[in-house]
Amino acid sequence: MSRAEPDEREDGSERRTSDSTARNVPAIVGSNLRRLRKAQGYSLERLAELSGVSRAMLGQIETAKSVPTVSLLWRVADALGVPVATLVATGREPNVVVLQRERASVLVASEGRYASRSLSPVNRPRSTGFFELTFAAGHREEFPAAEIGINHNLVVAHGRLTVAVGTDEPLTLDEGDAVLFAAASPYAIENTTAFPATAYLVVTGSAA
Image 1 (cartoon, rainbow, N blue to C red):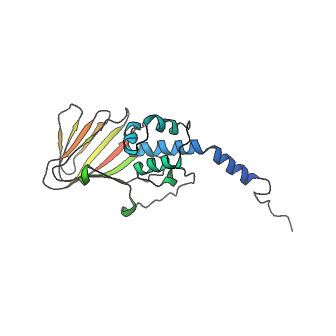
Image 2: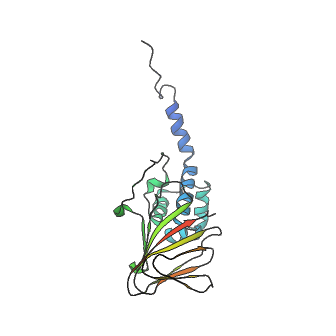
Image 3: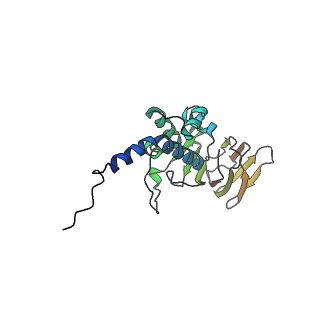
């Protein structure tokens, strides 16, 4: 009987793989953080506001120049609406992913009058973000400028919304209407009706 193939632990390959992964932790975390941030359409400044972690520190983490503490990882993960494990994940993702509503990443703001639900798997590499936005009756939500190169494509699924980008004249969108705009200027979305409104937003482009 021929000798079986040697176990990886016999020649130390498993230990070397673990050592290699450990040495690459800063790069893994940095790559995951940048990908997740871009997928959410957040600039470094916006993520810094949401997490309480400075823009400079976030930039150092993304470029693998700093190893974050566990406490800091928790704050960043919470701001992104993902498990901490997602920031250190190295495994291969399946080809089919089911996004369950009750486990979705949801950002609620303005005392519950505005909510954004991510409709894209947050732990997969991509250059596009997909979100469901809900606005309470009569609510106006203001958004900071995104980084140059980010584009937003908004379609109204239910209700009526007014979109004002920078200093341009506001646009009124009815159900089924869509608008594409560069998000490098601050913008606002307002539900001018007496009923809740829902829209879907696709974010494309790459943030620095």
